[in-house]
Image 1 (tube, rainbow, N blue to C red):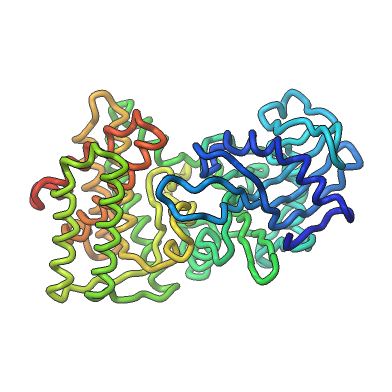
Image 2 (image 1 turned 90 degrees about the vertical axis):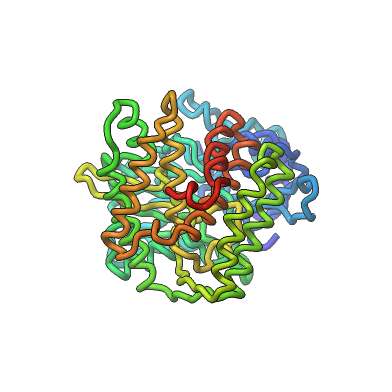
Length: 464
């Protein structure tokens, strides 16, 4: 155990008593990545007592490495590390029933009830107060931008929308994103918004405070507090509402394209850019090709389209061999409508710069061609269009065109003028979606398969 702050001699028995409860509870959580494989054990990374459980309420902060059998064909894995906030009460009031983890029968918490503390305003407010006062508790470091103030006494509420992390809103002032699956190192979800704040980019809320843990020589970014855009509309929900009403979304898509270009331009100023030459592009194409090969093995429905999809990557490799180069920079990494907010005044913001959580941290922090984000957004318009019956293909086409036009207005270059690069990245994204939907949401599989059919056509027919 690398870091513990609990009464002497209680940590081992505490974790032993929680073990059977967590084995059942964890796999049911939306943010748990190891679904479908049994939990075989836990290794504590850090255990920190935030409130002693000797009164009405106790609170523990845990970083636990979760052990599971490796997926078929995958190499052995040390286990993912998850951040948990465990509340302790004698009994749960009815309002906290959805947060129940279980009833402890042995150890220092015997006879008590443990639950996910983020559902409970009081423990969530403990976190905000620690950020406000820049507390140090064991290896936990609560940091705050000295230029921003945090008012005491803001009431907390957990956002219950499904997401890969957990978010708590404080009054209508701040939102705390608490990362669930964590890895040591510099997390882009804090790194990039801080860099954009230094550039004065208004399209991304500037971090107000953040939490990290120092465990031995490693640092884990655990949570980021940012201003809450009161009354903001989630881009995905807004698009679906307008589509359901038969309303045009092209003007919003164009504005969103401009916002994306503003963020890309600011990131290129704030952080280093690189030129991708033949060797780098060859590695990029090889990675896309390998992902396609694995996807075809996992989802046989891709097999008829494999030759056409490979041609998308082969065309990019040909341009690279001819000496074509592209500029790469830091990008959002997982951009789609759900990662965008429109304020009541009509301004768009981009949020959630964590990148695709399933990818290694080092890969998520690598410079990429900006078209990677653009391809993700184009795929998102396609997903929204398929929520209509029949699918609104013309609506999606109009949104895609408007988004690219808006992007060009700010960036000075239209992504559609580089069709080989755009097709390769959109193909890579659609292949990823096919595998994801086949594993997690089979009913959605026709959506990316429809894109795959289009992208597998000859080049001139596959363009947006």
